[in-house]
Figure 1 (cartoon, rainbow, N blue to C red):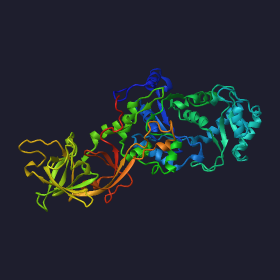
Figure 2 (figure 1 turned 180 degrees about the horizontal axis):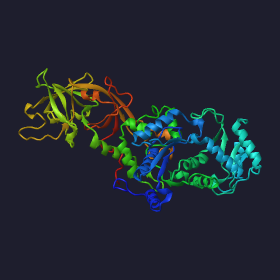
Figure 3 (figure 1 turned 90 degrees about the vertical axis):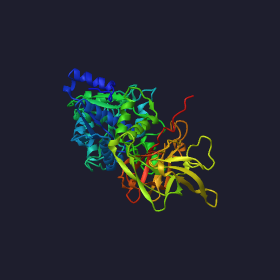
Figure 4 (figure 1 turned 120 degrees about the horizontal axis):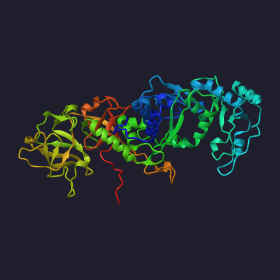
Length: 556
């Protein structure tokens, strides 16, 4: 089933072996199980593409399940954003939307079953005492003094916990495994705790909630998941995942497999650090285009197809590694280079007056929307006596390798005419206010009949036919390759990560762009109409990526 665009990996090899051997009745059921306590980021995109992609490629299905076992940190806003992000990436769970809270009654019954089998007990140590009894990585833990409570006493206490008789922190339900285990997760881990908090789905029905590790594997089993795929930090939790399933009469036996999480330089993906960026006002919210959240990358203009391509390219393995941000940005460039229509926008405008062009005259040039794809059609671009060029495209005293506009030099206005600079008009402070030039009427379209060549081609917009826009130039949020590694990550924020330009001059047709429409502004980079702020009367464009990687390391 593999194709060149879906290279094989160890997970595909496992699935193919299982299918060959008839395991799981030939089913391939995966799941994407986010906790609804934050916005998804680029690392989650890899997991989404992997779980939904494997299910798609092997004729199975992927569930979207919210592991909502911690009501104090969860919010319906996160639930809505997660659904939106998964759909935007191009995947759909169909009728298979689930919540761990759907199973609270059954999870409680499983806990009771463990108590009856002598595999779980109610512990009345305080949280601090539990930590003290747990031991360290080099020293074994100690048994809780409540470990040998009778089955009847444990059942009674657990039922009273559910009934709300006890305040938070007085009791927890723990698995009875091995306090001397070298794996800290196996030292009688907590299975249930008391939380007098309202749940977004179940309201105030419950005041005890299962721990993630207890609910996760059992939810997989109840949904008949075959391949429970998670990142490497859960490898130490796998023995507990297996232990819980092995003790109980479960409807199916999923197997957990771990893959390398996505680490990417010049960014952070820790929920705690991302929350700090938002709360400290470093960014304008979770969907700020500088954030590595899926909603932030979407707002910046990253196409979902480029995100999927990136996740496919970086591959899947069992060992952690760090991917260069340039790989992601290049996936975006490649996608947009092929799909984004071209337009002209002058971000820092300088007026150019063509003195021999008749005043009041206008004409229109037919410009291709994409130089390599005629199917994308063309557009009419107005031209008049006064146009705007980029301020950086003129130099009054040019250096020898400056091939753009300068006194006496002839350049091409893209798709229009050849023009020659004849002078300048300056402000009182000596800065150039206008550039004066003449044009060659015979060079309509940008080529001279006599075949003379010019080295410089400038983009432009007509003063009579343009609109003003706000343009936000986004760059990487951090200057350090590994933020926080050798300094406070907040001290490594890139001060140039956002530059907002107003009064930019753009083709008037760009005011008709819909939010999230993407373009290549010629010679400038790839841009998109802001998802929230862009409007017909107030166009706002975000720079997605530059045309070339300005962060690329120079080989030594």
